[in-house]
Length: 247
Image 1 (tube, rainbow, N blue to C red):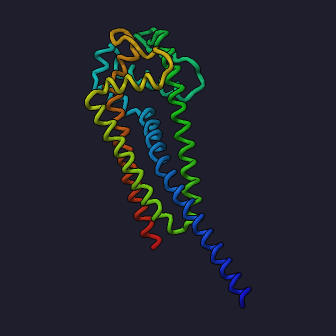
Image 2 (cartoon, rainbow, N blue to C red):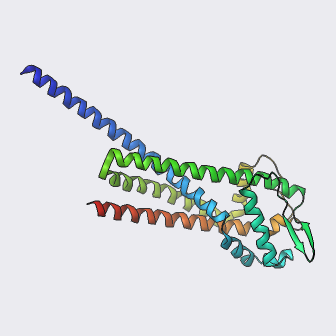
C-alpha cells in the first residue's frame, strides 16, 4: 500500500512538473510571438509597399514629380520598375536609364548610384528578415497547436493583445514625432542605417531625391502603419472565428 502511494505521489509530482514546464514554455512562446509578429508584419508590409506599383503612381501624382523632373509618368514608372528589379537581382550597381526621344541616358550620377548600393543592401536585409521571421512564426504556431491543442487560441489572444498594445504605442510615438518633424526622423533613420553620407544629395540636381522626396517616404510610412493595423485586426478576427469553429 505504501509503495502504491509512493508511486502515485511520484506520478503526481511528475505531472505537476510537466504541467509547469508546459506553462513556462507557453509563456515564453507568447512573449516571443508578441515580439516577432510586429517585426514580421512591418517588414512584410515594407516589402509589399516597396514592390507595389500603386505606391509609385500615387507618389508621382501626390508630389507632382513629372513636373519637377521633366519626365513623363511612363518614364517615371519605367524608372521605378528598374529600381524594383534592382532590389531583387544580383547586380551591384543600378544604371537607371531613361529614353529621351531616340537616346537612352543614365539618370543617376555616381553618388546616387553608390547610395543605391547601400539602399539595396538594406532592402534585401528587410526581405530576408521578413521571410525568416514569417517562417519562425509558422513553426512557433505549428508547435503551439501540437502542444496546446485548442488552448492555443487563448494563448494567441493574450499574446496578440500584448503585441497590439506594444505596436500601437510604437506607432503613436513614431507617428507623433513624424507629424511634428518628419525631417528630423528621416535624418536620424539615415544616420542609423548607413555608414556614410552618400544619402546627402542635392534636391536641385540629383534625380534620386527629386523622384523620391521626404513626402514620398512620409506617406509610405503611413501606408505601412495602416496596413500593419489592418493586419492586426484581420489576425484577431481569424483567431476569433477559428476558435469559434472548434468549440
